[in-house]
Length: 109
Image 1 (cartoon, rainbow, N blue to C red):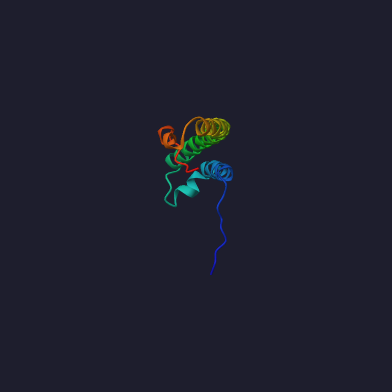
Image 2 (image 1 turned 90 degrees about the vertical axis):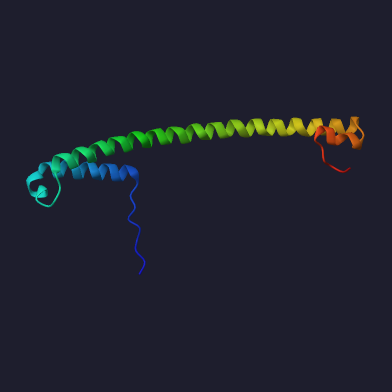
């Protein structure tokens, strides 16, 4: 039987875990009876949430930076391809075919 995915976004998970931590703190006596050392658990959960939020923001910044760098690289690659093509044509017109290999041109007429 197929199960429906219950995966949450990171923002949703952080929001829900913060709410969970707050309510566990409010009901520490009740919840603590079921195997959770409330102060340690909630402190760790809150700290993990802050760390995850920081990492998520850094991750988004890096993705944005990577996108910009990829665009820069693509522009430069296009320019180099055009320059290479022009140089190749010039070498083919200026040099006999036997000398093309010296320029890295492996074409055969």
